[in-house]
Structure formats: C-alpha cells, structure tokens
Length: 333
Image (cartoon, rainbow, N blue to C red; front, side, top):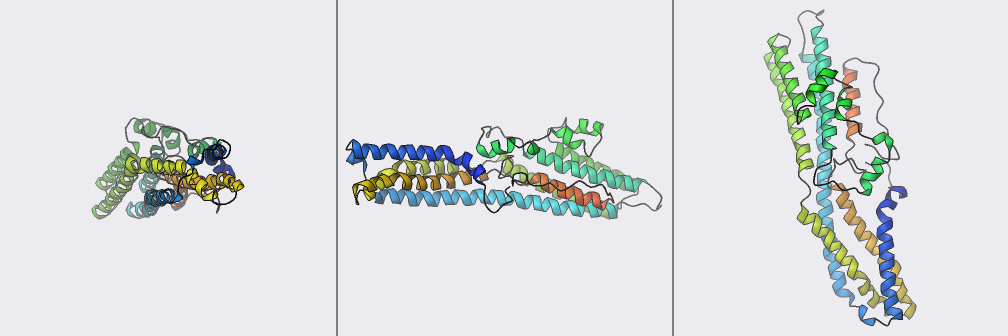
C-alpha cells in the first residue's frame, strides 16, 4: 500500500501514458477528418452521449465500492489476526506452566508455540501472494513491485526456516496447505501438554478456541483469494467505460462546433482529460479488487507479520528483535 498522501507521478505514469496517447491520437484524427475532410456527419448530439456517461459513472462507482469492500474486508481480517496473535502469545505464556519452577519444558513449549504461530502467519502470507490461475497476466501494479528487489518473494521453505527446524520445514512443505497443517501441529502439541499435566483442561479448551479463530480468519482470506470479483460486473464495467470513451469525441464535436471554427480543436484536450478520468476510475477498481496479489495496492501483510513477530518475541523476553518493515519508494508491503 502507499504510505504517502499523494500517489507519485512515477507510479501513475505506467498506468496512464498508453491510454493518454491513444486518446490524444484518436481525438486528433476525428478533428482532422471533421475539419479538413469535411466529415461534418461525425458530430452527433451530446445529450445521448451524456446519458451514457452518467450511466457509466454510476456503474463504475458501484464496481469501485465493491472492490473497496473486498480490500477493506481483507484489512479487517489481518487486523483480527494481529489481535488474536497477541492474545495467543499471552495465553500460551500464562496457561502453560509447571508446578516445579525449575522445569524447563514450559519455557521450551512457549517458544515452540509462539514460533510455530509466526511460521503459520508466514505461510498464510506466502500462500495468499501466489498468483491464481485466473489472474496470470502482468500489469503495471505488479510490475512496479517486481522491479523493487526488497519486495522479492522468497520460497516458503526459506521463509519458514526463520522460525522452524529444517526437518519440520521439510515435513510442512509437503502438504497442500502448509498453514492448515501448522495449526494441526499446534493442536497436537497442546494435547500433549495437557496429557503431561502442563495445561489444564479449561486452558486447553481456551487455546483450542484460539486455533479455531485462526482457522476462521484464514478461511476468510482464502475466500477472497479464491473467489474473484464477479466477471459480469468487472467485464461490463470495462466494456461500458470504453464504449463511452469511443463515442465521447463525436458528442464534443457538436458542442465545440457551436462556437468559432478553431474551437473544434478543443475537443482534443477536453476529450483526453475526460477519457483519462473515466479510464482511471475503471483501473482503480480493477487494481483494488484482489488485495492479496503482491501488487502496489496489496494489504501490507509483510509489515503486519513483522509487527506481530516483534510483539510475540518481546513477550518471550527476547532482546534481539527484528526491525519493523519500512516503506520502499513510498510502498509498504
């Protein structure tokens, strides 16, 4: 996501330049035919064009609102994961205890349960940023991220190796859903701690409920990831926008022709600006509908995971904590 109030021109330009050039050439060609080839029939009444524009604006607005809802829901889910993760850390530290204060096992269990949870969050992040089969095309939103070396994704096994042993990592990556398997491992260790008397039945149930909450939030993320924005809305929004853009200069011609002859050429700048605005509204909705695609409009999952890691490792009493993720080129991932 962007961390600045205004989107830099360097980000806008890759999205805009092709469309602006097309709009400029298209409107110039129409004005040239009207002026020098005496194709006066190209000018049409502006009222039907304005009617189409109004309808398109409403339709694109609906699509953008729906795209924003998906984006905001994704951010709320990761906010819930943050809160639940902190609760998990407190509960693990306070619930897993031993009658003998010198018993080292609770301390080892605390580290295992916390570090495996950090691995779980990492697995979710890496899995969500994998491209789905229905979205394999490249666009400027992805290309900007791919050009920044700090945002280059590592393989899942390398990411997990920060928190787990090599043997455990090797066992995890064999599963089709590593994140789900990690929670299963958490549950197995909780059961073992209960059987050995380090966790009461009541506390065991409480911690299991937290695992269910993590499953719920993971499922919510996977729902957004696996179910694309409905194509009937996205496609026709794109189609209607370009239909309006194609007919707009003919309506502007009739309006400009009411003034002196040179006013005809004002069609070019006015059309270019109006067409760019409508096209940009369409692109904004298009690039916001999938918030887990490793693009500039992504939920900053890397930064969120790092913040959780700092909090939980601090709960364990560790002093050598990683630094918080900083924005690169005003983009936070």
